Length: 296
Image 1 (cartoon, rainbow, N blue to C red):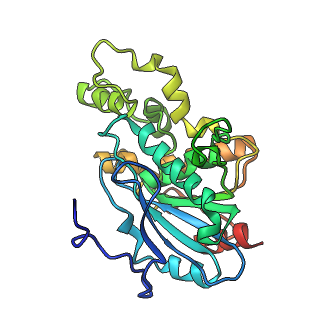
Image 2: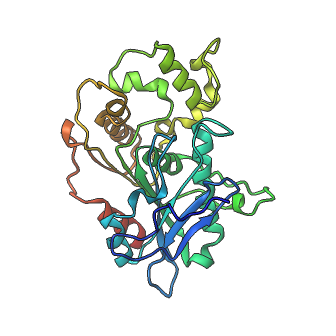
């Protein structure tokens, strides 16, 4: 059995330990989360944080030192931080990672009484991979499986709002060239990466553009409609032609694509990408955004 002595202790920036640490929401070894409960006699709203790491790394300790957590807890909003399996593990591909985050959301809802959570007021947030996951949950139709034998999977997956930092605009990566303004993917290494994102072992002999089912499922940009929940996006990266994967994955034009789509369909969005001149007249920060959408 693996000991947890080398893992970061679940203590936030105010020195407060998690109310419950390393809670298990599934059978995979990374199906764990920590939760800090706001002091309240009544069920509280919750923000569930999902870490980044390209779906191949990272950990729920990523935001332990967040000052935003302290402010949210003081405002009566509880905090959860979760782990999920990586895309390099069965069932392979990004969808396995996304479905773990979905299940954690459903697990917390199924155990709302234990955690004193108001299951009608839950938000998701994160950076990079965690940001995209939050938007995938925000824009997807309710994925509750009402006939499932597992009571967790019968819970709703709808959330009240989402906040995304340095997010991608879609996980249909074949759309990135048009959105970012780069040449279409032709390099065998790039095609292999996309194939693995889609859950395939290889790109050889495969028409990636014809993988319509998985492309549609991962394209949360296209999933956004006028009925989308409010969302907040912040991107601090520089613009221009990306020179490496980090700049490509976190390019501010991803934020612009989300803003443009929101304006197209009439969704409510607060978007900041200072390097390309995008700001919001409200001037609201993410804590104010969450308090407004979860406490009002």
